[in-house]
Image (cartoon, rainbow, N blue to C red; front, side):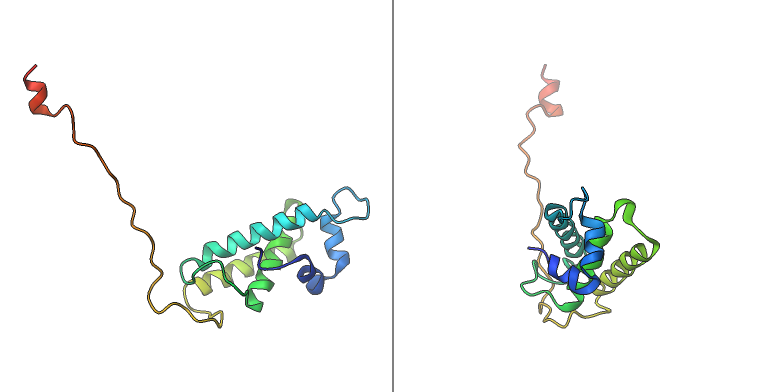
Length: 138
């Protein structure tokens, strides 16, 4: 589930700003599929940074995550990533996510006591059928 919603975008930047980006065929209706995809992509990008520090998905998104999700989604929704201002907001969001993942900025939620455990990756092999000793017998 995305960390922000269409309503969050409208609350932050207004309905006109969203229509400018998400009324793809200029028929006066928002392309809700494109908005949903942009919010999902933004959430995935955020999770990529938070995974180093927090169990995912976050059950409740702190306000800073909602703000970052909106800015990233608008950047993703913009054709050619939009204006210089939109690109700067995106870069600021990524910078903030890096600080959060490094522990320099807190989300204000409890972090796990122990480091997040990642499953071990192993490789299983079968015994070698044709070892050098077997091949010498031929």
